[in-house]
Figure 1: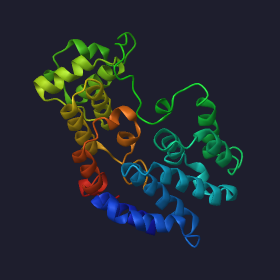
Figure 2: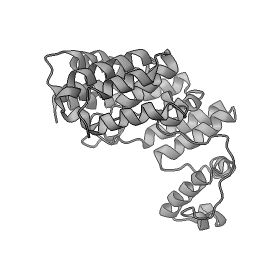
Figure 3: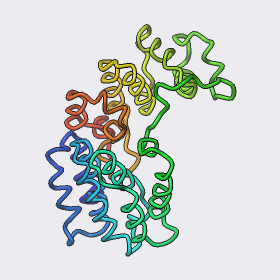
Figure 4: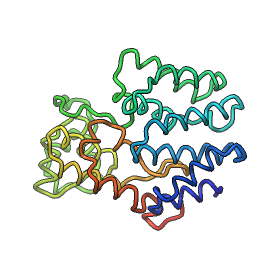
Length: 273
């Protein structure tokens, strides 16, 4: 584990706010080696989003790509959270994303993941709203989707309480795929059933948000925290909850405090990160 990864692990123990200055210092110090710098910067971007410091998140992403992009190092094989940092800076800090996406893409060599992602986003912004390009966007408030062809749709006619745990996971996937919030809300309310999947808790939370049910949305976001697991060693905490406009409606003070101060992922489970 690198020094940056140890620092991020400490943050995942619930010290996000306390360790943000140290992560920012490591990310922006020219003396920090490239890999620890961008990893610390990626974690800092996530925490900055939870602190609603969206302009700073975009500036940090721009700084790191400007410094490291031309060298073609490991940063150029990433996309998140640097891509979303530019999007949220536009959405919440009125800093246009397209010029920054294109300018930073020009700092990255041809054929690298980061360059392709930044250019794709710049193109998509011509005809799609920002929130659709951010992670965990769903058709909250939208119509039901036909069941035909949806994996697990045959489980929707069975007694949910009688399903095996694996079947329940598939059934929840089918409920979300068909955008059937009425069914999902009934399972939560009458049976106390919640999906095991992190992102399906977000799907439910967004629906509660558009329904104006603050308590229901809060419950789902707290459940999502317990189910979140980092994909990579640099992830400090998820960001969909505070970057998606719909989900932000149910990010209460309790939710924000929970995400920023409670152990998450492997640290919450007591397992090595």
